[in-house]
Structure formats: structure tokens, C-alpha cells
Image (cartoon, rainbow, N blue to C red; front, side, top):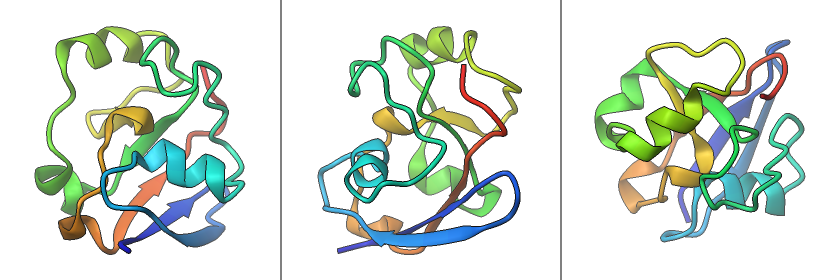
Length: 106
């Protein structure tokens, strides 16, 4: 199981195991990660699972789809490395992935 580190806006780190094939949002919700609200349950219909992907991981995580980019318009403090965690499928290559949650969602 790949390990994913969630860093909140204060710098507190929490590492959890994520199931390959699940999403980063699902791993966050399953493990009670603060800062991931996930109001739509992963349907890419809100922006409450917004994260910043550590820049060293952006190539592995990939680019957002057009639909995801549209939803990011509703997110707080969007940056070039912003993603919706519900749209990031966990692969074995993501072991060690690090994401940061914004100060607030949507």
C-alpha cells in the first residue's frame, strides 16, 4: 500500500496507507484527515477536497482534466500545483506522495 503524507496549512504531517486504485480523497476520508471535506463524495462536483501536490510529484500524479480544472475555479487559493484529491487515483508509483491541504476549502 502506498504511503501518502498529508500536510495541513500549519505544517502538521499525517501519513496514511492508501489502497492502490482508490483516490487520495478516499484515503483521506477513510483515515480522518482534517481539511478534506469531500462534500460530493468524489464525484468532481465540488472543490472541498482541494490539495496542493508537492511539486516533485506533479509529473507522477499528472495533470487535471478539463472538468477538474473547471471545479478548481471554486476552490480557495488555487495554485499551479492544485488538484482535487478525488481525481487522483493512487498507484504503486505514488508511494511517498505528499500533498498539502489549503487553509480552508471552497
